[in-house]
Image 1 (tube, rainbow, N blue to C red):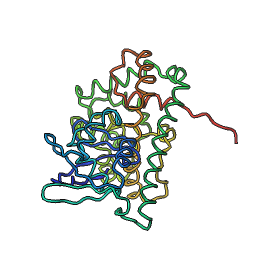
Image 2 (image 1 turned 30 degrees about the horizontal axis):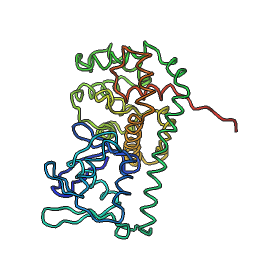
Image 3 (image 1 turned 180 degrees about the vertical axis):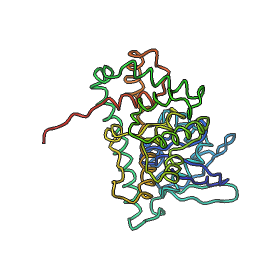
Image 4 (image 1 turned 90 degrees about the horizontal axis):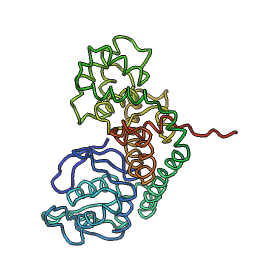
Length: 338
């Protein structure tokens, strides 16, 4: 997950995802910028130099801040403010899609393709390549959700009430119990997340971490997978994601079914362990971005989520991320004959 600074006040922040997959700003509220909205910004101001206009009280007319405040609700599905634009602009600069300059206290954003870094590619071709990537990925969520919608009745049939009840108990009891000593909670967690065939020492280590961090709502996948690797010399993307998603249920779980259904690229087993850790961090950021895009898609919000809530009204309080996770976990892609 990149950590970068805003362009004017140089405030450090982190985000997951990217311009091409959608980006989630990792601070209070976790505002999301969709790949379609990034694309709209790039097209709206292509060939122009404009003021940033990040002031909440007096955004500069014609600036990015004013445009985003006026159009984000319609084009992004989430209302954003001029303040959010300071982060959006920093991401666009960080990923090499625009450049910026300062005049006094004012920030200017240059969307002219000829001024973009080339990186061995003609600048106009580079902008087109970035745009093509956004177009390609922006179509992908609808394809995934269309597939889920076609089989939604069968998918919901395979989700059992007992499975939902176990998850609800894990979330409810997390803050009530001493996780590193409560064997009942540990047994339920191991069964639900299929964490079998590990040593007692491993379970002791894992549940001690869960107990220690369970109030830490700012915990990240990067922190957990790197800590486990430092302590145990193991690369554990699935277990890391399950710990993070238990503490922060708005974060996705990584497992093989989700990986296959969302076509995530992961590092091969033969790669050096340190490289695999870093590549899994990148893969999880992509997963986070894809999931954020999916749960904001009208197919999910108007069809899949209501179908889940009608089928399981007692569990309608689950986060959208968890509902999608449950659907994806039960979904099986149709296998075609070779």
